[in-house]
Figure 1 (cartoon, rainbow, N blue to C red):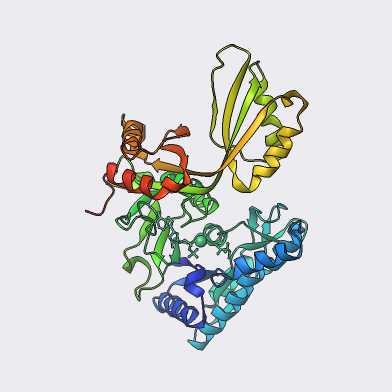
Figure 2: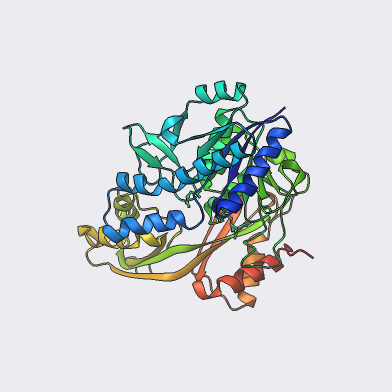
Length: 410
Ligand code: ADP
Ligand code: ASP
Ligand code: MG
C-alpha cells in the first residue's frame, strides 16, 4: 500500500464528463489498496473568468476580496469530484483550504503555504476515506481566504504530499509529461522521462508553465517525487509514460541542455543619460526593490566620457508602469530619459551539463545569429543562459535552439 496525492488540472476537470474520468483514475488507485488524497483545480477557463469579474468592477480591487472570488472555482470541482467518487462506491469528502486548515502568509493573490495540519485527514485515511482538496487556496494568518498565485494547485498538491509523507505526487494534466520545450510551439519537442528538481525549477521560473515554480521548490526541498502524467489516457500512475521530477542522482542519462523555456510577459526598460557615479545602480534598483518590482536581467554600459551612461533591465510587463512611475519620481534621476519596450520575450536554455561543458553559450549565439535574431540582453547562471529578443522571433528562436542542441525527437 502506498500513499499518493493525485492532482487534476483545469483541462482535466473541464466538465462533468472529465471529472468522472478523473474519478475513475482515483477509484483505480484506491482499488489497488492505496491511500489517496486528490487535489483539484477549477474547471478550465473559470479562474480567468473570476479574475475578469474583479477587474470589471474595479481595477483597484481589494486583494482579499479577489481571493474570496477567485478561490471559488476550486470549491465547485472539489464537491463534484467527491460526488463522482461516492457514485463509484468510494468513500470521499471535499476539503476547502480553511477546513484542513492550510495556513498561508498574508500576501493575498500569491500567498505562501506556512503550515498544513493533516490530523483530521489522517484519521479519515484510517477509515478508508479519500480526501478531495480544493487546490490553490488556504486561510491566511489573519483568517481570510488566500490564494497561492496562478497555477497554485500544483503547489497545494506537492505541499499536501509533503505534509502527508506521501510516496509521490502525480500531476495529471493535458500533456503526457514535461517536454524539451512547449509542444504547442515546437511540434518536434521530445518528452523527457526524468528531469532533476534543479532543472525543472529553472525551467518553471523561466516561464515553463507546466508546473508552478513553488511546487517544484517545495518538492526539491522536501524531496517529493513528482510525476507529470496525461489525464487523457486510461492508465494510471507509474503505468503511464510520464515525466518523473526527481533528484539529480536518480537520473542516468544527462544531456548538456535539457530544455528551452520562454517568458512572454517581460518588458525592457532602458535608461539614458544616467550619471556614471558610484552608487547610481543602488539609486535605480533600490526604490524598485522597496516597492517589490521584480527586476530580472540587467546591463550597464561603460560610459565613453565618464559622465553619463545607459542602463537596460527587464521587469514583468504587469509591473512596467509602476517601475516607470517610481523612477520618474526620483530626484537623483531627474535628467534620465526612460524608454520602454513590451515587444520582447526572454528565451532560456537550461541544463545541468552546462556546469561542466564549455561552448553552450556560443552554440546559442551562433544559432540565433544564423537566423538573424538579434539579442538585446543576456544573463546566465550556473545551469541556464537567457537572452532577450524581439517577440516576433520567439518561434523561430525556439525552433533554431531546439535543433542546435539536438533536442528534436529524431
Ligand atoms: P493544468 O491546467 O493541468 O495545470 P497547465 O496549462 O498549467 O495545465 O500546464 C500544461 C501546459 O503546459 C501544456 O498544455 C503545455 O502547453 C504547457 N507547457 C509549456 N511548456 C511545456 C513543456 N516544456 N512541457 C510540457 N508542457 C508545457
Ligand atoms: N485555478 C487556478 C488557476 O487557474 C489554480 C490552478 O489551476 O492551479 O490559476
Ligand atoms: Mg497548471
